[in-house]
Structures are given as structure tokens and as C-alpha cells.
Image 1 (cartoon, rainbow, N blue to C red):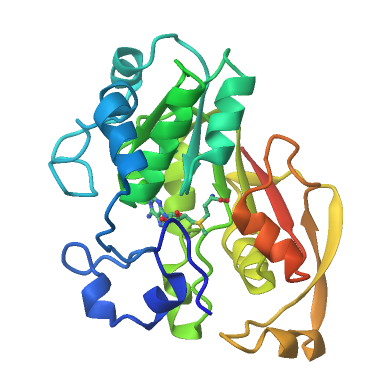
Image 2: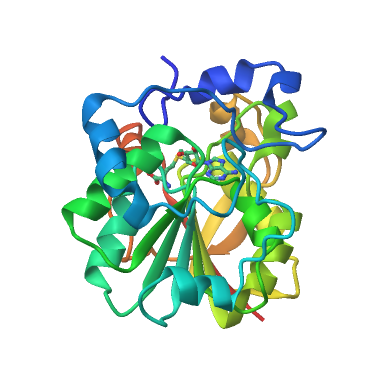
Length: 283
Ligand SMILES: C[S@@+](CC[C@H](N)C(=O)[O-])C[C@H]1O[C@@H](n2cnc3c(N)ncnc32)[C@H](O)[C@@H]1O
């Protein structure tokens, strides 16, 4: 059975789609497959009633997922779109919005931005935000790396990427959202001491995160947990074989206590997988 992400977005099917169909514009390698998904009546009502309050609809041109030519995600834009001047947490791939909404409700002294590409996830986040009557959360339907590419240095205080789409096939590992280019842009967007938190239940993705992040001299891995991982990659269907591969120790973090348990984390735990948490501080 294929794992579904938000309301019918099929990730395993995404892995099987021909690459040409997955390109947004030109040659970009994308971490998602664009599919149209109808909103049910409840989500449509949430959008009709509350999108104007929560959804930032002036970043991209209509029905595009990259920022419009010349757009800058800068301090002026943030001041103009959030009610208070406060540190900003950005969640990349916020799914249904459970995490970002819970955090925004628990921390009214901070601002939050949810970045999600799929309509039902955006709509569900709007629904939850309205339910909690949140003033400090905004949602953008945008290809997250593209937003970070046009972010002004220092405008973001913390970045979260929880349970990113695993892209298990070897030939799709390049579509994993944690990539050196995104890391460089996240680094620049973060203010001094800002942290990028990542979590995954896929062991092979954990190795991928270490490979992308640990050797960077612009981020410090601030974890204190020693974890043994295979030092070679395995593709789809071969996770069991990883146990026999050479292993090495890696530094990770304790579970981030600001994260609520979403369906994705629960499914991983139910399947007996280990959750890997990472915290990288901007140097
Ligand atoms: C596996 S889900 C996890 C959702 C959520 N973080 C959680 O833990 O429940 C990954 C999410 O990332 C979103 N996503 C993938 N690539 C993205 C991108 N380039 N920009 C924004 N969102 C993206 C997907 O649509 C999906 O909702």
C-alpha cells in the first residue's frame, strides 16, 4: 500500500512518476509531484472563510509554486504580513499543519510560517489556524527551497523539516529536499545562532542528512546523542539489508519536545522504525 502524505497525495506513486512530469519549470529537480486534489466541503469552507487571513497569496503568481520575479522575502515583507515583530519559525513541508499550529498556539510571542505545496495541506492548516484563532501564523503555498533562495539574510530564527518525503529509490535520492543548495540558503536566511531542526524515520534519509550537513563549516551539529548508522545507501525495498552494511557513529539529537506526534511520525513508530532528530546551529 502506498504511503499517502496529505489527503490523497501518493508518495510511492510519486516515486514512480516519470521524471519529466515532475519538473515544474525547465530542469528543476523537485521534492514533490504536483497533483491536483479536490478539497472536500469542510476544507473548501475553511479556505473560503479564512484564506484571506492566513494565506500569503502575493509571493507567487497565480497557480505557480515559485516566487514571482523580483520577490524578496525580507524584513519589510514580514513586518507587513505579521501583526507583531517577533522571531520567525519556518516549517518546510508542513503537511496538515498539526505541528506549526500547535507551536503557534503554544508560543504567541513568536511568529510562524508554514510552507506547503499541496492544496489539501494548505487548507487543513488554514482550518486549524482558524479553529485556534491564531494571529501569529501565516501559510504560503510555495516550493520551499525557492522561497529560501530569495530570503534576506537573518530574517528567520528557526527552520523545521519534519518527516520529509523519503524518495526511497536510489535514482530519486536527488529529490530529497535536504540538499546542499537548500542548506546554504537556510544558513543565509537564519539569524546568528538560528537552528535548523530535521527529523526522519527513514534510516537511509538520516545518513543522507549527515552527508549533506555534517561536513559543512557553516552549521554546527549541536546534538548529544550517539547513533550507529550504515555508511552506505540502500534503495527502495532494501532497508533490511542495511543491517549487514558497515556502520559508523553519528551525532544526533534527542526528540525535539516542540514537535507534536503527527500521522507520519506515528506510522514510522508503528512500523518499528527509529526516529532520527537533528539540530544544526548556524555558525
Ligand atoms: C511526509 S510529509 C510530512 C508532513 C509534516 N512535516 C509531518 O511531519 O506531518 C512531507 C510534506 O512535505 C511537503 N513538501 C514536499 N516538498 C516540498 C517543497 N518543495 N516545498 C514545500 N512543501 C513540500 C509535502 O507536500 C508533504 O506534505
